[in-house]
Length: 116
Image 1 (tube, rainbow, N blue to C red):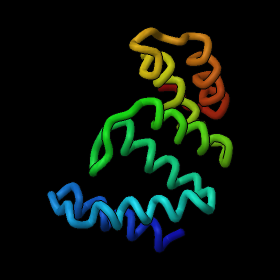
Image 2 (cartoon, rainbow, N blue to C red; image 1 turned 120 degrees about the horizontal axis):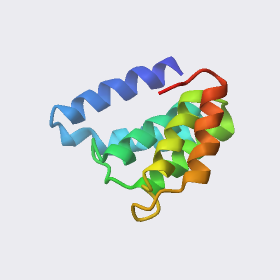
Image 3 (tube, helix red, strand yellow; image 1 turned 30 degrees about the horizontal axis):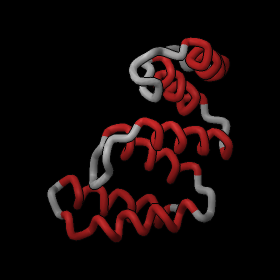
């Protein structure tokens, strides 16, 4: 896991600095880690899709799917809270909020002390 985190950061930094030649290696690294159901990889993939950076297109549906998969693997209050924001702002529903879903995930985060 530490090797993945180190390599991920190294490649992400290279991409952020404009070195597009490492994009295939970066995507291959993520693909390999997804095979072992690593929650941190799902979270990293969420950021890439949510923000549309480092070689990924912005895609809120893929971002949501990555976060929900991470929640299936770990019970993380910050991940739950972030899912709440996706629903609250209607990111996957053409800008129409999904308050019931948002409330569910905000409540899940709040139970563990996330208050933002």
